[in-house]
Length: 213
Image 1 (cartoon, helix red, strand yellow):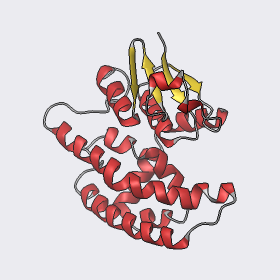
Image 2: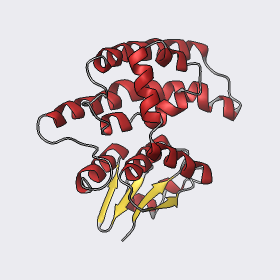
Image 3: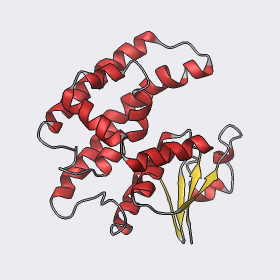
């Protein structure tokens, strides 16, 4: 059975799952869900995710939703394939900490900045300068903590690339195309880390696949 990812390539959480699959060099089928038509709020999609959000994931009888849960499943179940994305023993606790940091400290601010600076202009909407200023200040504080962490470790979770880094890739790539790039560029360790993880061959595969759809 080939794994299936249900969603849209415009969705950062879908690309997060793609990234884990490509790092593991695993074959998968992409099942497009027409969000504009509300397909994610109807059956049969609701049978996969009752909350009506993308992505949804199938691996044989296993059906999952929530992108970070899916990436962890891929990392653990297919640990002997491709790039190791988790650690064994005590180091995994630190990886888990930084996975939580991404979800609760980085992502909420990144979502607001992406909406204002990446998505609104494409939709012909006016960017809210006050919202941008407020969230740039919040992101700067988060990145100061990242700079300190990355002064001690090459990657966030440990000295090698893990899910703690991978989970940042969709938002990070979007933000680097906006004025927010300056917040990364002015922090040497953060800037080097961002360039490193964005240059990974698996991420290039994800972006190529995104551009095909």
